[in-house]
Image (cartoon, rainbow, N blue to C red):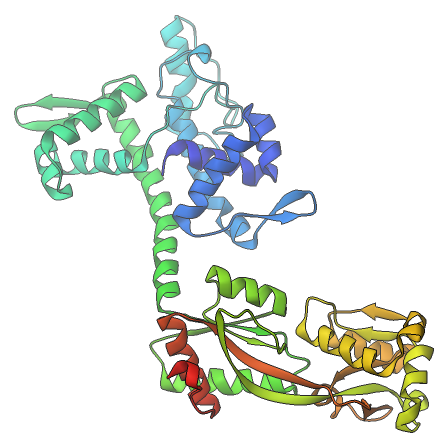
Length: 440
């Protein structure tokens, strides 16, 4: 990681997007996005997400913004030490600009440049000004090694601690000084000391190193947790009393007792996104509400429930042979096609309503069971759902099974790799299912 990526990322966070930062920094959006992507990879945190035609900040990005702001301020102070004119480096407005009072290094900026030009330094205003240029891209590794050289008082001792050769570290310190444009170290046969500029640079480097350690240590902790965590995805339960909710609660409670050192992460989403997550490695195993799955995935059915037609007692109090008339007479609220349940519902309706009458069906997609129930109870809608989703709601909601039997099955699905198969075996064992032949 380097100072440029940190400063550019702060501009993206502060201005609310890549394009806004690119305009402000007079850089291409591609180069800005690449810098942010590189930093996201280092800290293992997505900082932006798609929102319509643009980007928005993630909640984690908002939480980390103070650290990035501090880094930006320190990099701006570092720019004050670079004795180069505005034309020597690309224009980078906004770098170093904060609402904090300037510290001694920031105050020294105007004095240093004015003295170099033979002018009187202007008075400070209590607000850090935008710096004319970003200092050369400095590696955070180089900063950490500079700090170690100063603390040990010797390039030789620092190189020994790092585990590299002295000539390599000497070259790295010389390159750092050339980037800053001034001598940072005073070398002697007894070791090294910092120059006046080096002492000021050290103060900035130590603070910036602390900020980066906070960010990178968060990433290290996250990587360790991810490596030790089993990740199970599931279709969203149809209410707290649903079969899916019961199975997941049983699994989580039992897993905590039987695998206390291996956390289980459970996330709910649609069947479509679960299949994509299994392919990408986001999930190790998943609970799906669909009978069909890609041939390269293993699977085991863990639950079944009949589909029922549900509505208010005023609409559903009729014999089964009138179900077709009900389906074509009232609006139907159903989950979207992104769910396996929705495909089951479509098949059930097609088996009851002749093709020539299907144009009479008025269907609205709602991916929220509480909203669907309210539509039924308050707005004369009907729905088709698994029996377990509605049987405890009570009057005035009633239901009847669909004339043609259509069961909704829940299946545990896993990729065909050793780690996923091991996790699938553990999950099935906890839920009380025998090991399928595909896991033998």
